[in-house]
Amino acid sequence: MIDFEQIRLAAEAVRQPMSRFLRDMIAIPSESAQEEPVIRRIWREMEEVGFDSVRTDPMGNLLGVIGHGSRLIAMDAHIDTVGVGNPRLWTKDPYAGDEDDRLIFGRGASDQEGGMAAMVYAGKIIKDLHLADDCTILMTGTVQEEDCDGLCWQYLIREQNIRPEFVVITEPTSCRIHRGQRGRMEIRVMTQGLSCHGSAPERGDNAIYKMAGILQDLQQLNERLATHPFLGKGTLAVSEIFFTSPSRCAVADSCWISIDRRLTVGEDKTLALEQIRSLPSVRATGAEVSLYGYERPSYTGLVYPTECYFPTWIVEEDNPACRTLAEAYRGLFREEPVIDKWTFSTNGVAIMGLHGIPCIGFGPGHEDQAHAPDERTWKDELVKAAAMYAAIPALLGEGSP
Image 1 (tube, rainbow, N blue to C red):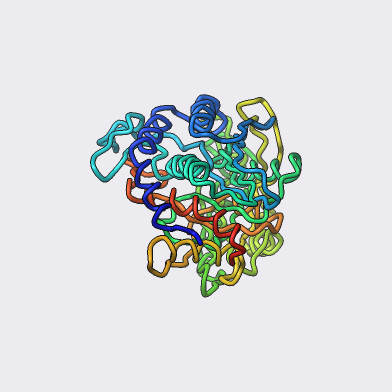
Image 2 (spheres, rainbow, N blue to C red; image 1 turned 135 degrees about the vertical axis):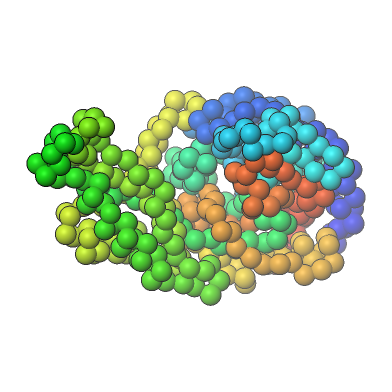
C-alpha cells in the first residue's frame, strides 16, 4: 500500500534545497544551443541526490536514470530558455533568482527549469523511499526546445532508441493534468517583384504591394479555421515580414512573411499549406508557400535537420498514463484533479504527435509566465510536483492503473 502521506512529507522536506537548486539554474543563462553550463549544474545535482546514472547524448540532452526495472517511464524538462527581451520591462534581475516566502523569480522559473528542479528532487524521494519498484525512471533535461520543440525527442527516439511506456512532460500546468495541445507550423509565403528606381515605380513590380492582398486574405482565413471541443480553434498569425531591395530609393524585388499556424484536431500540414496556396491573392501573385526548416547546431555541434511541422496530439482520459497521474493526484491531495490542455507547444509534438508514445503533462508554474518579464514560479507548486513525480513509479509498481 502506497503511503501518500510519507511522500507528501518527503516532498515538503526538500522545499529548501529544491528552491536553492532552481535559483542556481536561473543564475546560468541557457538559451537554446547554449545549454552546456546549466547541463553541467543539473548533472552535479543528480549525482548528489543519488541518481543511479547520469550521461549526455551526442546532441547534448541530459539523461538521468533511477532504478533498474523492466518498465521504462520518462519524465522530461527542457532546460533551455528564451532570452530576456526588453530589460526595462523587468523589475527583478532575470538571472538573480530572487525569492520571497512564496515565489522564485527569474528567466526559466516557470518555463521550465522549475519542472527540472521538481524532477531531480522527486528522484531523491524515489531513492530515499525505495519507490522505483519494477520501474526504470528516465529523467531528461532536453535542449533546443525553445528553438524547435520536439527535436530533442526526435533524436532520443530515432537515434538513441528510447521508447518509454509513457512520458510525463513537466512544462508548467499550474499543477493541473494536461493531456494534449494543438500542433503548429512555421510557414513562409514569398512574393517576387522587379526592382527599379523609386522615383519611377511604374518601371518595376513591387513585391510588397503583392503581399498586401495576401495579408488581408490570411486575416480572413484565420476566422474560418476549424475548432475542436477540447483543444479549441486552429489559428493563424502573421508573425514577421521581410523584403529585399537595392536601397531605400528602390522598389522591393521580393517580400516574404512568416506565419505561426496552430493546428487543432483534424488539421495537418497538407491541409494547412493547401488552404494558403488556394487563396485568390496567392494564386494571382504566384506567391510561393513553403515550410521553414531547422538546422541550427546544438551546443555539442550536432546538426539534426527537421522541417518546422509539429503535429497536434491528444491523449484520452482513459489512457493508462492519464489515469496514473489522476490516481496519484487523488491519493496525494485528496481532491479531484483538473484535466486540461496547453495553449502553447511542448516536446509532446514529437513524443506523441510523431511517434505515438503517450505523454501527459504536470508541472509547477503557470503558462502565462512563459516568456514574460518578471517570470516567476510558486514554491508550493514545486513541492506538489515533486510529490507527484515520486508517486508515479510507486503506483505502477502496485499494478495501477
